[in-house]
Image 1 (cartoon, helix red, strand yellow):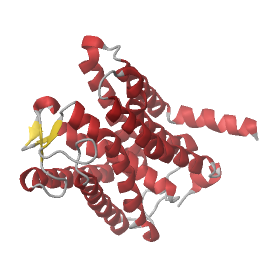
Image 2 (cartoon, helix red, strand yellow):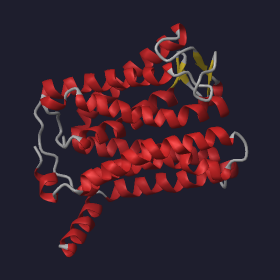
Image 3 (cartoon, one colour):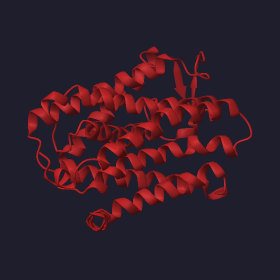
Image 4 (cartoon, helix red, strand yellow):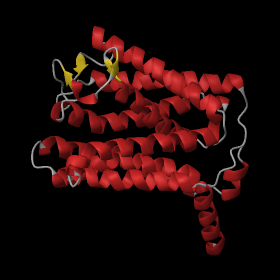
Length: 287
């Protein structure tokens, strides 16, 4: 049985070698970032890491949904996130009152392109983990999961923001909360706003998948699915390492560390366990 398992693992890695390499690049650069060994090359490395993340999502997503449906997911994510972000910047709803600084670069209206891209790439990881938790491994979605997948995936996305927002806003000043907030300068309304935004995105995509096709087989080995929570763990690395290498704002860094362990890390590990317990033949034959 072990020999079969090892053979299956080797075959799975070979079949998804590009995804494995991209995940390795992302993890390697994520480990270096908090250690501050990058010096003047830090900005270049940030772009390389972001491109590796984007390439991973594009390749992984196209193999499951095809380019057409992945483009629909991107379009829904882009339009909904930009609309709600713009509304909140103008009206303080649903996130709260805030504005972005120049740190995040080019923008469409008041919303940086980097933020819109993050919604897409992180959103895909959370969506995929939501589907695998419920055993929905096809190219569509089962009727019984039409609301459950968006509900779970939205919660996974909020986990990331719980760890990230106090650091990016209060410490790095990538965006500024006008009146501060109870969670290290972040208003609690922000997290409910995140959940609402992601739920709308996911619900629209779920309805699209359900109405436009069946839940066709996705013949991919276990490693293909496990690489998604592995990438999500890669997003968590900076929150886990920051307290050990930073010298200021340690209260916020340690708070994000604890939240990260109890949310992002725990969820990723549980997702990996869930996938590890599925029979390989079930993964390859799933409908």
